[in-house]
Every structure is written in C-alpha cells, then in structure tokens.
Length: 268
Image (cartoon, rainbow, N blue to C red; front, side, top):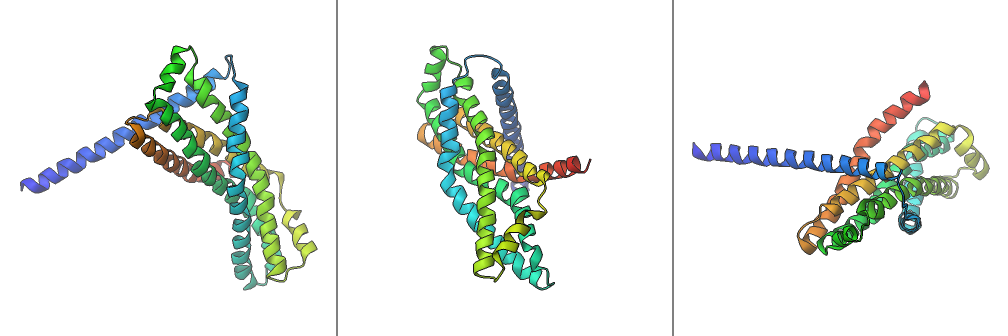
C-alpha cells in the first residue's frame, strides 16, 4: 500500500515542480520583453549591435532558408498536383502553392530554421557570458545588459525575419514552378501568371506579420534562456536546447491563433 502512495506523491511533486518552472519561465520571459520594450525609449541605442545582429540573423541564416524554401515549394507542388489531378484542377496548383507558401509554410519553416540556427547561437553566447561573469562586468561598467544584449537581438529578429520570408516566398514559388514545368508538364508562362493572379496583399501581409512576431519570440525566448544559464558548460548546453525547443513550440502554437486573428481581421 505504501508503494502506490509513494509513487503518487512523487508524481504529484514532479507535476507541481514542472508547472512551477513553466510559470516562472513565463514570468521571466514577460518581464524581459517588458524591460526590453521600455528601454527602447531611452538612450544609448548601441546601433552597431543592432546591425551586427541583423547580419547574424538575416544574412547568415539565408543559406538554410533558401534550401528550405526551394524544396518546400517543390514538394508541396508535387503533392498538390497529384491531388488536384484527380479532379482535373491542375490549373489551380500554382495559386494553391503560392497561397500556402506566403501565408503559412515559409513564415513557419523560416522561423523554425532561424530558431535552430540563430536562436541557439543567442542562447549559447549569452549563456557563456553568464557563466563567465561577463554580464556582471557589463553592469560594473554601468552598461545595461538588456540594452546591450537583448534589445539588439529583438529588434534585429523582428526586422530581418520578414525580409528572409519575402525572399523565401519567391524562392518557394520558383521551386514549385521548376517542378511543375520540368517534371509535370505545366506550361511556364500560364503557371507563373497563375501564381500571382489571385494572391492578395493581405496574403503576403499575413506571412510578414507572423514572421515579425516569430522573430520577437525567437529572440526573447533565446535571450531569457541565456540569462538564466547556470552550471558552466553543461548549463550552456541546456540553455541552447531550451531556447530552440521553447522558440519552436511558441511558433507552432501561436501560428494557429495568429492565423485565426488575421483571418478575422481581413474579413472585417
């Protein structure tokens, strides 16, 4: 009789600990975002850090985003063509591909790729600074670590992820175009025209709004993981993993609610 009660007690304590940790992490994340937004109204701005992070998040993430976008567009077109062919609707493949890529696939997949590449780097860099007491040194020099480390990453991610998504949209559509014209027998000119004929401004805007918000999520979750790093090299590894997992989950979960909100907004 003691063993089941002991097991139940341990399970309860584990669940309470997990819930407590999640609440603590959410509070730390919200506080960090609030402090970062509040500091935007105060000088200095450290613009050099802003541009350095834009280069890191945008330019250096392009190779993985290019591969993701091209092959996502290609495989989506291939699968859509097979399905639409059963109903004689292959003329709508171009529009369906372009709509899916601009509204959903490219923003989400680009966010996940940037979270894996740039988000992990943010957490690792800030985490290493924490365990080596470099952030304490910044405070000793009267430099606000939030303005120096966090704000540039949030601003850069919010600006550069939409830029990356715009490039990814065109590359994804181009990937679908190549598959359709070289493998599936679609005529080049009509396919290319159909890709943009029915795409509205709000379709592209939805993807860009999502990308900007995903960028903020990636930066905030990665930075808060880095700032909470304890325990040397092992702690840095945990922070890096936590940053990627938290950012990816936030992107996937928030995507549904953002999609719903944007659909209601455009219908108003």
